[in-house]
Length: 175
Image (cartoon, rainbow, N blue to C red; front, top):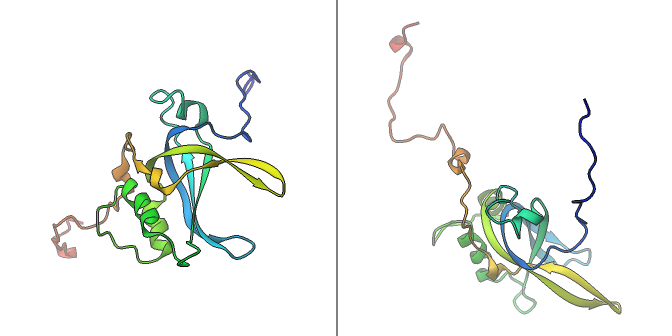
């Protein structure tokens, strides 16, 4: 029996742009980075959710598992990230007001694996005389997901104390 049979009629060009639209995604990776020229930014990699093919057949169903890259740039005028850009992402990931973020590792730990909804656009720019098209997602387009992950409490620490701090001694054990 064959492992699989080739079928090329439904192949999509994965190098093509993701069509404009609203997509449900998972934050795949995030953290600080820099261009070869030294310009600093925060990268956020979003993977289009593959569990929503039936719920969203025209968007996620056609583009599932593809990655959209989001860059949050430092402002030239201030040399700092715009707090509203960072807050849009945290709010969309479900964090309440006044949640502290200690450092970029804490930022990544809080966000990686979280579901969010974003608007994907197509941006055109000119570089060295060529028009370049690329996908664009603005931080202000991040929203809370309409489809919370099933079993998302599975990420919680199963050994975290839940209020009962009863201590068990060896003499209490029957063996």
